[in-house]
Length: 150
Image 1 (cartoon, helix red, strand yellow):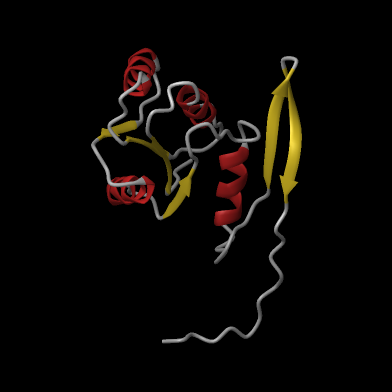
Image 2 (image 1 turned 135 degrees about the vertical axis):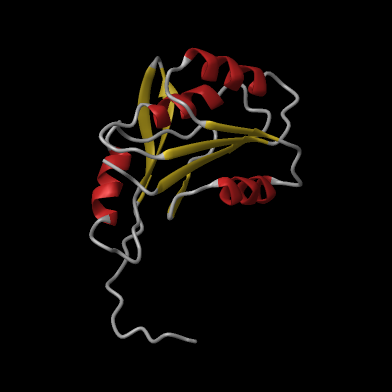
């Protein structure tokens, strides 16, 4: 199954969380995607962990390491490298709800949607268990008769 999805993770000095984000992304099933990790020249062990994980992992992803001005500069650098028509941002420390999340998104993109929105679940670890602490639902109402401003 061919896909035109690029997933971007931008990170700087987050050695404690970057690998769980990479694993969550690379464990996605049933669809292909491009994965770009952009490190803003971390000074902790972030870069070393990414490189070590990449060497041991059979799935490949693009790794960029360069100094950037801020988060948005890093995102823009990664977007310039991205080949996908659709770009998703998954920040360091964030994970997908399941290993079929991107597949579910991919199926919706085949419906030629103009906009796709999802919910966010915030969680915390307590006594070794992941507990949802808040769910952010932002429903999109149907938009009709929207004229083109151009």
